[in-house]
Length: 249
Image (tube, rainbow, N blue to C red):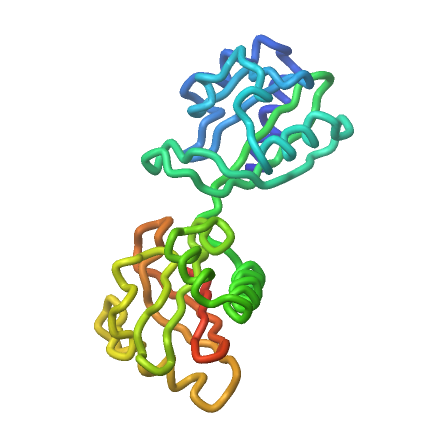
């Protein structure tokens, strides 16, 4: 992504606004999921090699919301000549239009901001731990309300490949699942991974005599839709096991 951005900046410096037509068509500035897009410092989209080509000529302030709008507003005010970066959520045109996290590198050249971003299908361990802390505190305070929010895919507890699941330690059943509600009410103790390995009882055994633990297993990544290795952080909260995990290849 950085290399493509540097290439685009050099091309723009040599050709000026004539580069917009080149950036917006199939060619050397589109590499798989990577493409160049350009906005001016007033927020108008000027060029794009991706789905945002439909926004060329429009003010981005009219279509951006929340964190993305904040990231964009920061981008157009950054110093010129330095590569900056930020994260936001955007439609992945090569993945059926799924909204995914995207990390973008951008550089301002005069009153133009050139950018290239890549999608982030996997969260990291720190993000998983932070979500576990948030969910644990909420469940400690009000279990039923928290379970309802988790099962409703409340954005506080579900984003991309990160989600919370909760098991009642007495009944050994799921009481909440942030990605697959069909698991709620089913037996967790007999749960198996996609390759047939028993994992439910082993997770319960992991925290049987301690407050928290970690467990690795194979599970479906909701973003990539592939079975991948998952590292889960487990914690006892009252009479429940609360868990959040991150995926790795």
